[in-house]
Length: 460
Image 1 (cartoon, rainbow, N blue to C red):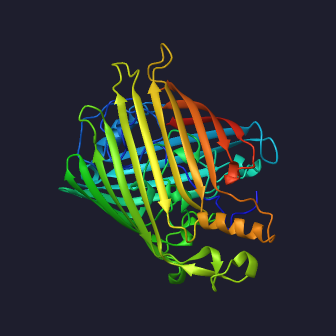
Image 2 (cartoon, rainbow, N blue to C red):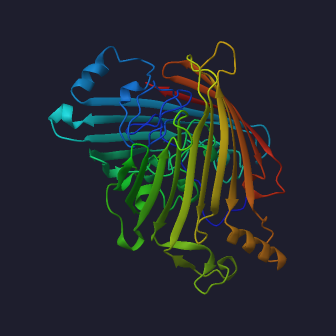
């Protein structure tokens, strides 16, 4: 597929089971608190709490239980370790430049420090390290998708410092400062599908040069104000420098060069149980602004098409975007967890100055217990659309009309994923899936592509 003016191989997935503020997962009828969304290992029901209230990490089921009694002892002194392995295998049945199958994987280790228990001082500290590896099927098979079929791929096959922050609550205020990722607190979405279209903070997928998702960290923080027990607002400030996304150095802790450093300022409003007190739900709406210097995706310094003139691109510093997320339970599960029905919607749009993609829209539905005797297994269907920057589309049409290019005119790409999640045992979930990609790369002339996949999540 011809290049779309800039590389798009830096998109990332959601983190593994959350290490700070988990959101309650289907199929359990629990309140969906704000913060990082886990990758789909069910957690035990918890009592309702105000937005932003941390959920004890020991509610997460683990493959090795309480580590022979070690975890309770560590928790008593204020130390809560975590370790999670995610693998994603994908094979294309057709399309691309070759038939291939690849495995990408991620291991995530973290430590939550409960300062009151450890030292008698308020707040918590979180440190997280992530290692990713494996080749992307999108690249190895030459599929040319706008988003990855394996969402865990991205930001380099290296070890990174994913977080190192301090968090504390002062009445209705919740503050988080340090090495953080904006996607953990803003525009966060469910993370149990495999395709990048259906997981994580979508803003970081279509504006990857501005918004750095997990596993990248940067200096910054956010403040959240709980208006009521079910409603909150939050705002953040993050330093954005390309040094943070260097695929050779995952432990950069500097502040970058002032000439190519900017800020990202996101805002978000959140409402728990927006439609019914009986049925858990979460709705979020937000926006962001960034002043990072980036090259225009089409125009040169004189306002002409730089692909024709060969001149340097004009620099832009006015990046904005809006986003929304919805998760809603439609049917409460039975006592054994079966027959819970949930829906979700994610939508993101960014300004057209510098990104290759201008929007991403996704939605879907899931149900537990569709197979007799398997009450907590889950069947889920997600659909999505990704749109190429309309300015790129217009440029391609202009150049083709003038016989200056044979490049395909690219518009929208569509993707559907169906998975069946098997709750094998505590701490182990396996999700075989099939993906159908229509108009790969946004090229309506390209035939549809079918991918078979398998996602495995292990909480150790």
